[in-house]
Structure formats: C-alpha cells, structure tokens
Length: 404
Image (cartoon, rainbow, N blue to C red):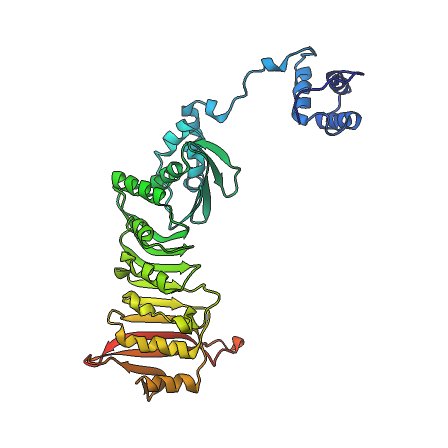
C-alpha cells in the first residue's frame, strides 16, 4: 500500500489522527479505532505512527511535507569504530555463527570481521546449478544466485535474502576462501559436491587457491552428481589433495559409458577407499543388467565398496567370475541382499571356489597362475526383527596369499 496519506472529500485523515490523539488513548488502541472508521487498508501503521509522534512532540502543522524528511539511517551509517566495538563484544560461538552474515553487511564491517579467526568447519557441501551456488557449512546454508552479471542475491538458511553487488561466483569464492585460508593446512572431514560441476567456478577457485597458497586435507569426498564427467571431476578434486576416501553417486549409474568416465578419475587410484552407490531404478542385481553386464573391478581401483539396491544370484556370480581378471583389486565390500540358495552354492563351486570346512559362509577363490586367492566372506543380517537371517547383507572380498 502507498504510505502517503489520502485526503477524503469530507475530512483530512491527518485531522482524524489528531482527533484520536486528543482522546488521550494509547497509540495502538487509537490506531484500531482509526481503522474502524477509515477501513483497515486505508492507512498503514507506520504512517499513522509518524503523525502521532509529531503530535506527541507538539508539532501540529498538518501541512508538513514528508518529502523534507531526512534520509533514514541504516547500519552502514554507524561509524566503523562503533560497529567494531559492538561486534567485538560477541562471544566466540556467536562470532562463528554470524561471521558470514556480518561479512555481507557492508564494506567497513567486512574489514574488521575478516580480521577475526574464521570459524572451523568439519563438513562443507557445494551445490551448483545454472546461475546458483549453495554452500553448506556444517549445515549452515548460504546461497548465491545470479541476478545479472554484477548483481547477486545472497540468502541464508533462516534470514531474508539480500542483494549484493558482484558476480555470484566471485562472491561465493570470496566467502569460501576466507574460511579456508588459515595458517597451516585446513583439515576437512567431509566435502560434498552435488548437482553439477561448474567449469568457470572451478577455474576461478583454482586460481584463488594458488594465489593464497591454500592447502586442504580432506578425509572424505562425496560426489552426488547428475552426470560424471572425467575432466570436470578431476579439475575440482585436484584442488583437494590428499583425499582418503571418495564416494560416488550418480543418477545415471551404472553404464559402460559411465564406467569409462569413472575410470578416468585420477584421484581414485590414490585413496584408501572408493565407495560407489547405485541409484539406478531399473536395474537387476547391483544395478547391472544381465544383457549389459559391466565389471566394476575394471575400474582398476584397489579398494572399493559397492552399495546396491537389488540383488540377483546369477549376476553376482558373474561379478565373482570377473575377480580372476582383476589384478588391481585388493579389497571389496559389497552391501546388498543376496538370498542363500543352491544356485549360489553350486555356482561358486562351478567357478572353482572352495568352501571353508569350518565356516560355510566363507569361500576361497583361487587366482590362476598365482599364489594369491580371494577370500569371499558372507555375513548374514543379525537383526531377527526384519526376518532377514536368510539373506546375506554384506559380502567381503579380500585378496590373500597362500604363502603368508
């Protein structure tokens, strides 16, 4: 609604406000009475309050022109030394909570906030889609949305959005690098990259890392991507060496084409564990179609965990058969449900696997022309509430040597 008072042919609304004021009732009660007479949409409360406060101060000039009002003060008008003193009284935990928020108030506030020690986060998530970047710092979310080439909208999880001059990628990278650019190496437990990988963002972030000599040690990286594209994945993972564990999840997994893309990710060869999650809805066992079976062990990853939605014995046997041609594999953990049956047992024996006479849930699978063999250990679901004792929910495959 327009905050300007609208005169009626009968009586000036300012005169009505004055009459309410002269009744000597509290301002809120007077405003209610005013709205009953003029209608609830006729005048908003701030305008009513303005004239009421003028009358309270003894100013009864009804011809006053509001365009002469001084420009309202904002937080940017507070002297920087006063703001610094106010913010300096915040406890350390509040400084951590409001660090990002305060950086966006104005340039003078950003200056002294940047002198604080940035908060330490254990988990950082980066989401990118067309024209938008979202960071999550231990669950605290900040979004950067492109409005135009040099205007961005910044949003916080619980706070209103605000407009900020600058390119959305540059603003996002500035905030991220301020957090990561600490003396010594930054240690991050978990890095999550979701959505798509933006080449421009990655390139700018790489240049910033190089200029600031930022080194980050990451325990675990989780890639939850719409598409796996080798070059883009390599470019961003190369910013975070060394990495202990990488998890991969993709909407279009699995396929032979995707397997080639995954195989090209150089960081997978140097991590302690690679986890691949299947989300392919129309798959059989482990997401592999019988007519298009592809071997995850062909990825040449030494230690791998495969988490799959569905299970089928004959396809599992194809997976076991492929172990003989997997010279790089040292350890594999398969998470899924396979029902023990004669098809499984006879299939393992047909492949040449030998059962452990002391534990029928363990098989030994020899590797031709080698002293090595694979120990295949099936683990049943121990929770009787789900009536899954007749299913293997974990399968551990480990390369061992008969000479050991």
